[in-house]
Structures are given as structure tokens and as C-alpha cells.
Image 1 (spheres, rainbow, N blue to C red):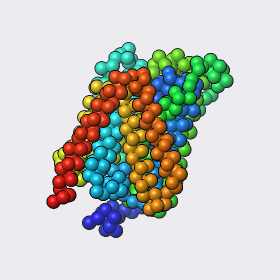
Image 2: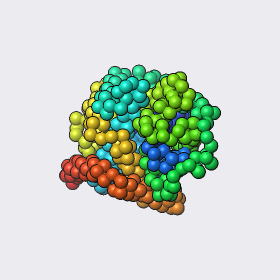
Image 3: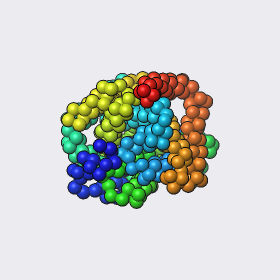
Image 4: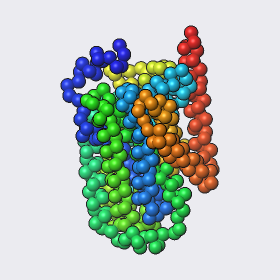
Length: 442
């Protein structure tokens, strides 16, 4: 039975289709995932008052990336999304399919590490050992373990917990935004006057780094079998959700730089928002931010483990990962869940917040670049604008180059680490593609 068959089990069991509101919630749940809590301290330390601008530019890069996802999603209507799109566009290239599969999965692994690290930083921010790196990494490992167990325990139970966390975090983030803006200690003109000179290049580098904060909008496409009229609902849900995410991130960033002294944000880079809110608003403000961060990162960890582990199982079924990873127990991909969580913890152990953030951003920029290339290749079939596909290719290429340039000129050892990870991904995907190529020639 093919995936597109009208007798697909999903169609037989579906009682009601997901509407636009639900699809927007899915995308926002994936995007509003603790990114603002992660990037704020790093951004302010690099460009100060221009942080909200860089966050909005990062959102525009995400819009460019989304264009190709939307066009391919409407054309293929395949819940496999990124991996399936590339495999179908280049059906005679096992290496291309393998490389995109490995890239997507390890991109998700990097975001899992990022979310868990951020969760840990905020969870222990009120304790005397808040700056102890190994305690932070141990707590990050424990939260990964907890949500791996939740995903192993029950899909239904995971779904209920996820819904509660997503909607609660959106309410809390709205409250945080309102409170920060209404407790401004300065004005933008004053901050501009006080801010050290910042180059346009620095702003664009930070915008590129923030791209990973918008990762998650493609989760809408995973639900294509559960929606009516995907030609209308996929673009509406994705573009609306990205627009809302840009607004939420920018308002929180604006409120933070107006209410919290830059020195406090930079000093407590890894849990800047909680520390700064506590200094300005008191303990309740700090607790509110911590709760928002924990809910945001928790829902992101749970949702990423759920969706990405299933995509890993599909890629393994196609022969591009070890066969063990496609095994399921009661439809739950147990080996894939444990493997993803384990690799994420390994990345936490060997890296730090900034290198994890930058590896995640580069990875999703590269994956999105490949999606833009695939869409450009079949743009007549997808009815895509040549101007927009080329603009996407240029914008995503520039974002990738800017992060690499920043690493090469400021933190060459982190660049070596990232390049080493990509060498591992390329080698692994090549070895598995060779086996698949042999099968195709038989």
C-alpha cells in the first residue's frame, strides 16, 4: 500500500481534519521553543541594542527558507517532509538522499541538545552551583532522559503533556513581554547613544545565528495527511506562525534590553532573561521567566523527540541508518528515541551553548539551502517563482557563510569542532549510500 493511497490507515482512522488554527499551533509549538532564552545573552553581548533587529532579520531568513518548504509540501503532500522531498526530487542519487537524511536528523539532535542545555541553565539558575558546567550538563542529560521515557511510555500521554506545555508557555511569554515592556528603565535612543559601534556584518551574523530559533515550522507538513485543503492550509499556517514567532521574539528582546541592564544580560549569558528579570522585577519576575523557559524547552524536547525519532526510523527503513533504528514496539520507535537522546547528551558533554547553537543554525541553514535548491530545480512543477527561489538560495547561502566566517575569525577551535561533525555526517551518509546504490543496481 502506498503512502498516498486513499486506503492509508491514517485516512481510515481520521475523524476530523486539522484546521488552520491547529496547524498554526503546531508550527508555533515547534518554533517557540526556548530560542529567545538561548540567543538573548549571546546577541546582546555581540550587538547590544540591535538585538531585536537581528532577530527580525533571522525571521526573514526563515521566511525565505519556508517558501521552498511550502511549495514542495503542497506539491508532494508527503508527511516525510524534508527527507522525502529531497529523495523524490533526486530519485537516482542515493548519496543525496542519505546526506539530507543524516543532516536533518543531526540537526534535530543539535536542537535537542540546545533545548536541554537551556532548560538546565534556567532550572539551576537560582542555586549557588548555577555556573558549574558539569552540573548543568548533568541536569540537561536528566531532562533528555525524562522526555525519552515519556515518549517511550505513551504517545497519548505525551500528546496531552505537550498540549498543556505549548499553550501555557505561549500565555507566559505574552505576560513576560508585557511586563518587561512596561518596566522599561531606558529608551531606544539612549541605548543607541550608549551602544558601542556595531557593523552591519555583525548584525547579519547574529541574524544568521538566530535562524535555529525558527526551526520547527516544517512540522506542519508532517501533518499533511491530517488536514483538509493542504494547498491553502500549509502556506497559511507556516507563514502566519513565522510572523507570530518574529513578533513574539522581537517584543521579548525589546522588553529585555529596555528593562534589563546590558551588563546583567551579558554576565549571565546562559540564563540572562531570568537573572535580569529578577534584578528588575523581583523574585516573582525571575520565577515567571524561569517557568516560561522550562515550559518552552520542555515542549520542544518532547515534540522533537517524538517527530524526529519517527523520521529517523523512516530513514533507517530506507537503508540510510542502521536497520536497528527502524524497529518499533507498539508503533513507538524505541531504538531511534534512545539513540537521538543519547547523541544529544553526547553533544552536550563535548560542546558548549554557543557551539551547539551555531552548529544547529549552520545545519538547518544548509538543509534549508538544499530544500531551496530542490525547489528551484523543479520550480515549474511546483509553480514557484524563480526570483524567490534564487533569493532563498542567496539568503541561505549568505547566512551559512556568515556563521562560518564568524567562527573562522573569532573562534577557530569551534569551527574545527563543527567541521569535524560534518566530516562524520558526510562519511556516515556516504557509507550507507554505497550500500543502497548496490541494492539499486541489482
